[in-house]
Length: 129
Image (cartoon, rainbow, N blue to C red; front, side):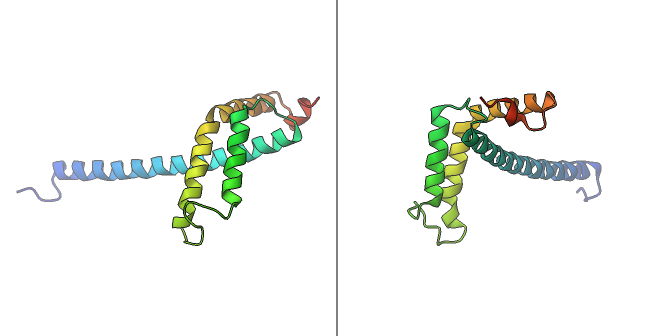
């Protein structure tokens, strides 16, 4: 019978801890990416609204409008009066919207990176008519 101090047991225990940490890191990374995409979406909306960036598909515009209207609408699949559970449908709508926006968000991210690399502090002033 092996006790807990044998090398095999120790290695198995170490791999288990490593696996748990890796899972936690991947969940945190998903959450960080989600929050970054939301922030980028707000920046895209601002630049689109101001006329500074127009390379956006009509589907993206419609998706953002529909998601926003759903979020502010008092009519939900699951009422927001129920704490936490009531927000699940809103989160699902946001996630679906971000999935639809993915291509346009990547183009917009590239646009912002190129403007920053060119050394322009306020990139939006360069692209106005």
